[in-house]
Image 1: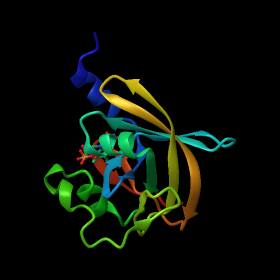
Image 2: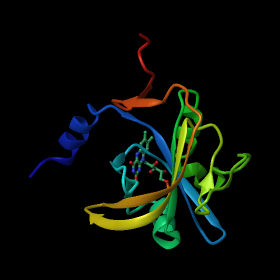
Image 3: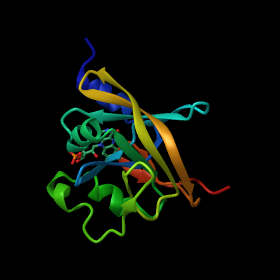
Image 4: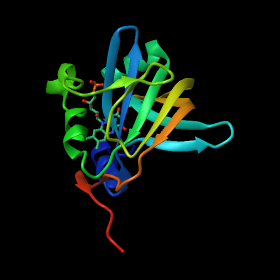
Length: 159
Ligand SMILES: Cc1cc2nc3c(=O)[nH]c(=O)nc-3n(C[C@H](O)[C@H](O)[C@H](O)COP(=O)(O)O)c2cc1C
């Protein structure tokens, strides 16, 4: 049996980008910070995110069947913190100039790329659900990405 604390420490060595995954079910919009994002297929266009079963976002994706992945830019650390902060769970969209995407999922401003998806499959995986999304629309603004490693935000080394 692998000790969960040892697993957590090993996984901290994995460097990743940072995304915010938003969703909508009826009038309810929600979203959270997610690093467990991956590309899956170009044709058909598929991506995946892993959502904690205990998260409110997981419940909204399950109900609404849509999600939008925002690849965060280097200047968006505060937004990443906001969308990870349980204490501010109900205030995350306050003051944000968000709009509805092609699927109805909320689209936030300022991301370096956005993938607007309809749920293609939901796979039970331990304490998470793996959502495979079919990409309905993409946006790309470019810019430097926000990175995450050993519990801290990082940037690309220049050169
Ligand atoms: C850098 C970072 C990456 C995260 N990655 C994930 C993730 O991949 N999946 C997940 O379920 N939660 C992830 N979280 C935790 C959620 O963002 C956090 O638990 C959030 O408060 C859940 O919000 P909700 O319950 O309102 O949906 C991450 C947090 C941070 C700071």
